[in-house]
Image (cartoon, rainbow, N blue to C red; front, top):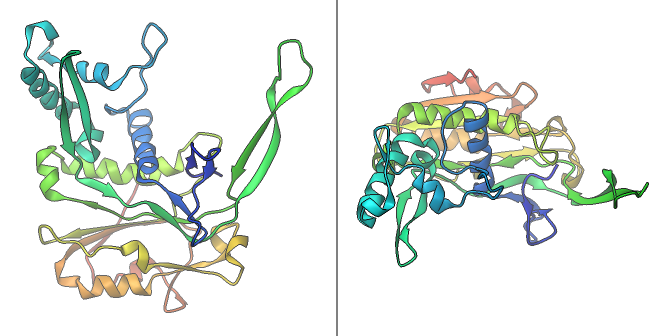
Length: 307
């Protein structure tokens, strides 16, 4: 698969040259979540591809103007000042678009070519770049396409691409409650987000990403405002007897979580609850001994996510 191609480097999977680990941007993960939210849940999002009658793709300025309305009435730019446009668009987008409530955005607003501004939302949900828990090896693949190389030709086109045979990627993210207030983020939005992280990954349908599987999801809910432990992704390790570049399956190794459990226990009094989802093929260990995540988290208020 190609978890996240780099368009300026032949769309090759992104690899950290120093560590030889696969990198996936936060933008790719957010797109995965957005696609699931709109295509599978049928919920309105702002950032999506809309084809106009002319055959061109709607740009951000025109997309913003989709939200220039009051009640059922569509408003005209010529009847409004720029500040009024910005205020109306801001209010309607936050009411309508879950992705802006989650991730924020800077949205251009244009009354005329000489009178323009923007509406900025700081997203309460922020992810670090994902990074594989092991070294990866880039593979070059060449194959035939389904179409002729030119009209009337019997010779098919050739496609060339770079893939990774396997990559187990860890992401870490936080939800900032202060930013959540400004975007009017709701608890049910967070439920949709968590669903999208898991099932969005499972339902990727592009050829380069088909077959990707979520393996572990842990949501830590804190009691205290403005508190988080940080870097939880660095407290798990994928242990294998193979050379890391030879890993081809989740059961080629085991996920060691002793450092994660230790960090959670240190801050136990600050933790309200821990929600989790574990893929049945993932093998978890604590200090080298196989364990269920539920047992490893005994002593915490836990809930297994069902979706």
